[in-house]
Length: 139
Image 1 (cartoon, rainbow, N blue to C red):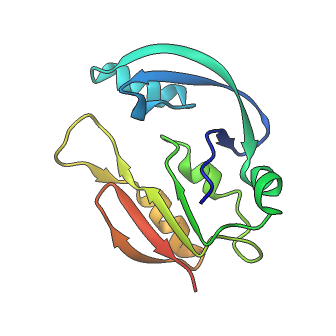
Image 2: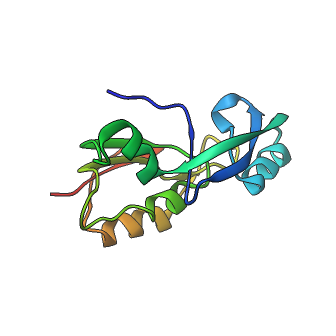
């Protein structure tokens, strides 16, 4: 296993990282941060963080090859990063991605159908759903 603690985006640059309480809500997306504050969470601060393309990260740690399993949780930017993958040449066989839309409630959370529809259109099948995350596989 390789766990990397770094920012992932659809281009290489520096982005503002919004530090939230609880830290599981930290995000690079200002709209997400603003929404979390509206529903009662605390913005602890902001940091400028370097973000990289997923392909560049893979090149630096795995000769550019995707691992069989990839789990991502990018608080509002998941679809943006998923769209940077070349699904015909080099892709993970299994993807676990957060597919619920967090609205501050424990009940009646909605699914992000854009992520689901996108991965289905790339040849993935839903293998399992934990309610918060959906696990997709591609043969």
